[in-house]
Image 1 (cartoon, rainbow, N blue to C red):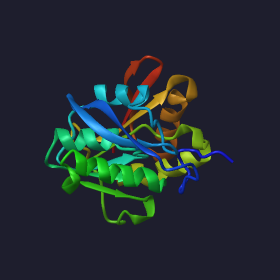
Image 2: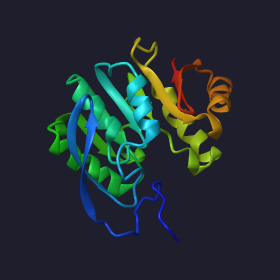
Image 3: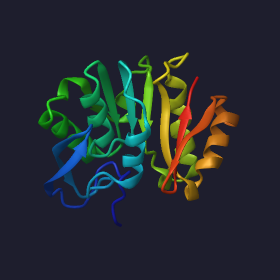
Length: 202
């Protein structure tokens, strides 16, 4: 059976390569591998998210489904006062995030770990995510039930959850579900190239 980027231990060969990408307004060389999300570079949805979100707030920021780390690395590079919790079920992705954070000199501000390794008492000033829609609606809803209530309340102006979701994969219905199920205000902050940026607050 082929790997998915949400496989905990990918069976595909762990052959690493480097890519030159643009993060936080600068050129950066990062390490990627097969068996993770978007190993060919920064995917379109993530790029749109990074172009639209405000600068990261000071404090703790959650990158939910971090992959090799474009969101994590951008937030850590943009604000030295931000600690980024890079969370993924994919162990290869977490290893890549750690290596890339070290490569770019921000390892002291990055905590890469599986969901169950995040201490229960940690809350987040912001959450940035290109969530794994293709895991299925039930799994996605369970993820959001787990993490969105951990936003600090009230959210700072630059805080809250910023989610990028394709319009044709249910962005608008997801926004309605968050408001109805979790009672957290959700607005469409931007639309670009078939994607919505949803902003969720407390």
